[in-house]
Length: 64
Image (cartoon, rainbow, N blue to C red; front, side):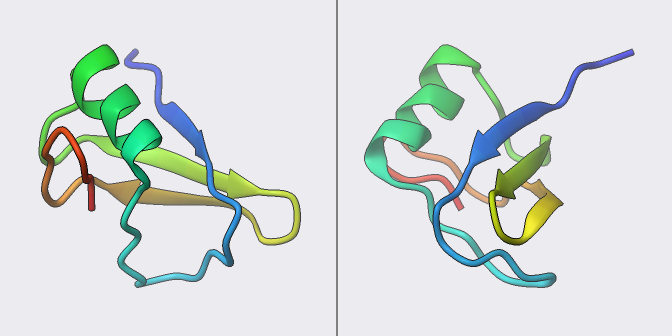
């Protein structure tokens, strides 16, 4: 069973919304975790709960 990567996201989370991660989180996902396009993630914050998302594009400075 593959573990899901969980990412804290301070802004409001909603279904069917594109999220562009900041440089530090993008670096973490693309370089440290080596996450590729299509990888499923969990996004969470303290007021909207947890949402599932998928990587659509990656670069060293930006993950969508």
